[in-house]
Amino acid sequence: MSIAQEIRRRFRQAVFPTVSICVAAYFGYHLVQGDYGLVSWLRMTHEIEQTKAELARVSDEREVLERRVSLLRPESLDLDMIEERARVTLGFAAENDVVILEPTP
Image (cartoon, rainbow, N blue to C red; front, side, top):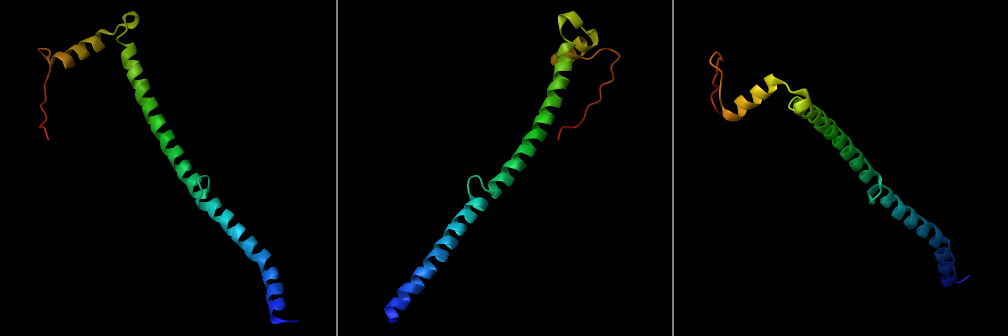
């Protein structure tokens, strides 16, 4: 057998494993780093958790505001709430109120 034939034979034997390794490396890289890879999945999972926490916080805040607004509706008028809002808005206090002034930072 000549050297050229030996080189061709070994080359043919090495082509399939080399191509297979390259294809596996390509898909392995994209499995981890791709747009839908593991790193992106972990980042999206973290963002989902943060968004759920923010949603819970905003929902609680909304419920508090809805309760306060419901006290100002004509069908369920709360005189104490109206008086409180008027005092805050106008900056007034009653004669027997004690006013404690806090220093501004």
